[in-house]
Image 1 (cartoon, one colour):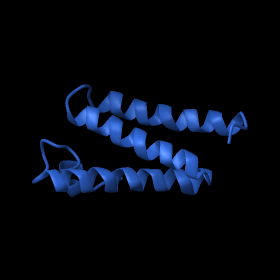
Image 2: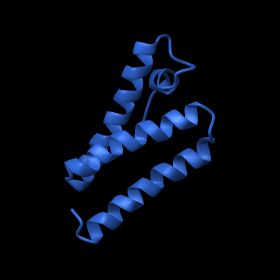
Image 3: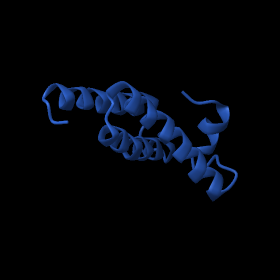
Image 4: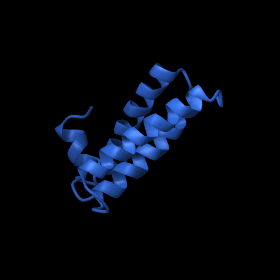
Length: 90
């Protein structure tokens, strides 16, 4: 859910400037949070997704883990959101 520009700029090491990095990471995370909001109808989950998505992607970009772990963490977040909805926590 990102083009080449966001993919490159959302990583601190690939961004043209600090401002480009912050804007690109925020834009990508907002897009993902918007998807969670649309599907779940929950602003709380969207806000959680915004923060977690930025953290997960930053850690991947910094080399703490690779693409597979990154995607598993993103999927794990979505599964936790479903569990929270199913349990009636929201």
